[in-house]
Length: 70
Image (cartoon, rainbow, N blue to C red):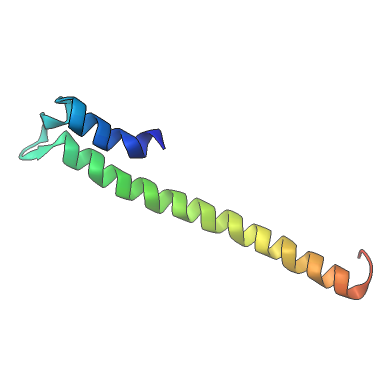
């Protein structure tokens, strides 16, 4: 959350992101594109964890339908 809300705070209240990072790109662009990467990485982590939980739920449903623990 700090990384996500850092961009508007830094852009509004400081000049840190106005300096050039590489060629015509400023640190604001680098920070903004890094947020896209962060979102995709967090999405993949979430989906992998959710799939594990889905498997556990399916297994619990099967055990409940059978009336006992395997």
